[in-house]
Image 1 (cartoon, rainbow, N blue to C red):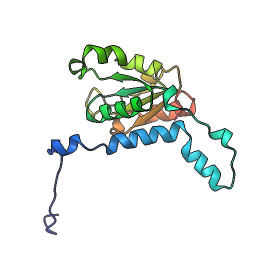
Image 2: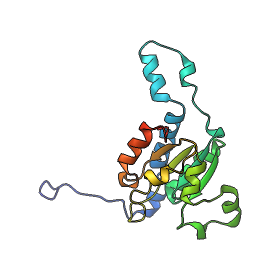
Image 3: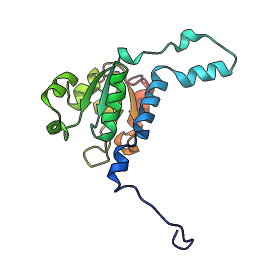
Image 4: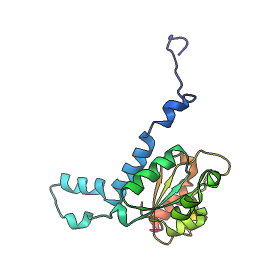
Length: 176
């Protein structure tokens, strides 16, 4: 860039602007909607001149329990979107407990990760990569699942163990 006299701008320190950007949370919510409503599959079905809607009824957000892993800026936005659609929302973020008041903790059932995976239909990941979060979604933690959840990862790829995710998909341990 220097050789071509191209100016580089970084917004990583512009916290006022970053606080207002919902695009990643909107993407996470859109991905969740696409999965639970089978939108890509139904679009493909119609593109092939078919229309058997019964295959694509999907699920309604308001009937789901959605787990938010990471309750920072993006996790809070995802929480608000899910609540607005009437979902039962649970939160896991061991670093934010001090910021949550008692009524929030009581009403959202802030859980340990294992409990969240046991209870949720959708698990949406909103964490930074650290030694603690790297591969936090893996074979062991997915083994606690009772509902074959959908996993939404708009965090970095290293948050999930991809081999374990593929195996979980192939064995129907997760739905998508």
